[in-house]
Image (cartoon, rainbow, N blue to C red; front, side):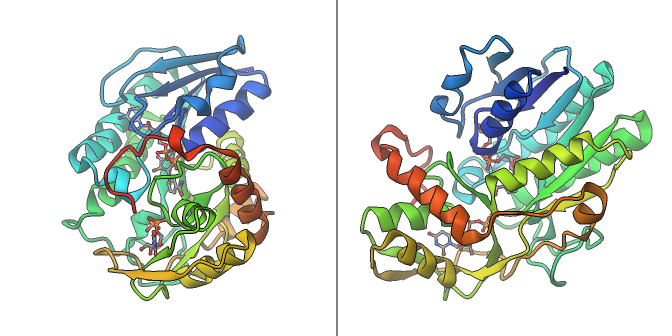
Length: 322
Ligand code: NAD
Ligand code: UDP
């Protein structure tokens, strides 16, 4: 059994990771500044003797004794990371430096939750880990994209210079229960809008594509990467290669909710990537991982969860939601 730190552990993905690690019997420390987190995500873990919750900001140093670190802390939805872009960069850069320092001191293995956003608006398709990306350095998405690119650089340099045992996962769009219903991401927006019989907001023409991975598949891939003993150092794509246009997603949500709401066009935000699909050859080969849950099934589970929650209990963290 290990002592495991999960930064951003009260968020959408982090809370699910904490839950699984606690169930496996590890000593889990969940660290979060509650910027986009919900206490309800982890309240059920508070009574477990092997779970500890710390309110802390990763941009500030902290000294803990751990064997593994899942470094997930960073706002992930565009509306959240653009709310205070300078804080977003600090979170990726200073947060990674602090966590890498801890990993070095404790000789802990550390995993970075990186992102498909490091590919920007990709010029090759699907995206392989060897592709360097096409990222605007000065746009409204840059605080997130460039922050994660620097974080990857830091991880590789701590590995090369200090022999820190690192893992880097490039996560593609992931959805599922515990998404913040007002995070402004496409899956949460569309499901909430359809359930509330409001028009579904399509940005641009809706012909841009994304590949949607169900939360459980994603977390399984991350665990396999973290616990792989083949000293797997470079970045690995984890995502579902099924590729859908945003319009197709809207039509599927309408079909599955049974609420025949209208589609309402909104302007396409600047630098919105036109297509996105992971090449998961590396994950298949080295982690024996591939997603199991198709979009239709994952959406059904997510819609059930959205129907079970009270939206009034969720504070919209920023004014940037529709
Ligand atoms: P989330 O917003 O639900 O979780 C992020 C968590 O980090 C929140 O609990 C938030 O309060 C916390 N946090 C933010 N800044 C912090 C700081 N300075 N100090 C401490 N805690 C801080 O988002 P998520 O979807 O669960 O994303 C988790 C990680 O996965 C992020 O690093 C994100 O970049 C990465 N990722 C997610 C996706 C996705 O589709 N969900 C895709 C690519 C990458
Ligand atoms: N999008 C949309 N309507 C919405 C929210 C998002 O059409 O209400 C589009 C958005 O422009 C983007 C895609 O859906 O092309 C995915 O957006 P999201 O914010 O979920 O993630 P990201 O752009 O970071 O992949």
